[in-house]
Length: 304
Length: 161
Image (cartoon, rainbow over all chains, first blue to last red; front, top):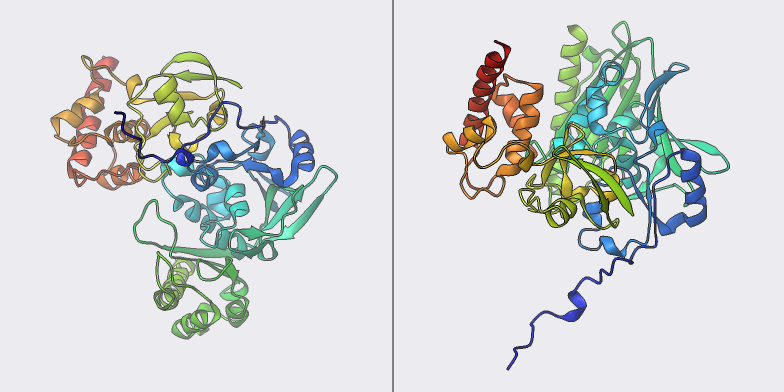
């Protein structure tokens, strides 16, 4: 007698070869925007696919409409225009960490890109994907907030520019409309001396989702801090810019600042949760330490 | 849909679906079973291939995204009778236990040594940071990469004679 298979039929994948309806791989942005306008939220947008394929592990066949941006070479450029850096949304983490322009002008972003995942992930994952996934733990997000980045969101008919600090609305949520694509990240440059610090805390060095990240970017006139960008990841439902901390630093020199007190203020201005990667208490304590560490590092950089 | 890829030097035209991962394409359609599936989520590195010159987790690439790409798998490095110096070094250093991670390790080593022929131990660890091994504790794998660097340096000087 044949024994009945213990496997439940409904657990089997239903791959037939005709499960998906459309796979769009446009070769220019205008075409991509037209497709986005037509199919809107029905589309899954694929950039580097490093989040998309994890999120849809073993159910890829359930995706009906794909919009693959991989052939949009116009979104793979890093250039300077009107004293601003323009980074295409399809620029990879590897491109960022290898770019002399980024290393020179935005070292905190380059350092964060170098801390993403592993070589295998950095070669595929993109800055645009990191932003659109909008994870509170996205490694590039705190640096983008600290550098006061803006995002260009395009539709078939037009475009709008949104500040990074307004973009994120919740865990994996942002204010993008269904017909929009993120095409460019715009970051102001400066003639002033700008120094920064990047700290990622995780359970190991590679392939780790951040327990906490901190990006500090300070602009100096002489020794005086004239502009400050302080942002953290994995300490709130979205990456957060700590404007209260920034305000304390403005018009001061690093020597004037009480690092420990600032660290404590950081602790009281974040709202972390308990999760797999750390408890609320741990994150609050570490936040104090990383702030002090970042300021010490900045002090060394400024004096050298 | 149809894509064109070059795998280990051979150009191929293949019929794929979006939910065929590059991993599935290489293993099932092309029989290149040196590409392993470990976690299926880009964390273990067993499915590593070199795609357009860079290390890539083939489990995270929808096959259509590999259109026009150049792929190298471990089968493209050496054969059983004619091992690549990196493979030889892994054998000689005793760097292989269960072996599941090794194709990925070998490819990560290849990519590293192509860029840095004389790496420091720190650079080796960084170069292999996307590949997990649960048997060896890494020490002998790192020895193997160092040994391979020496072998390749000698080979390089020979061929320049």
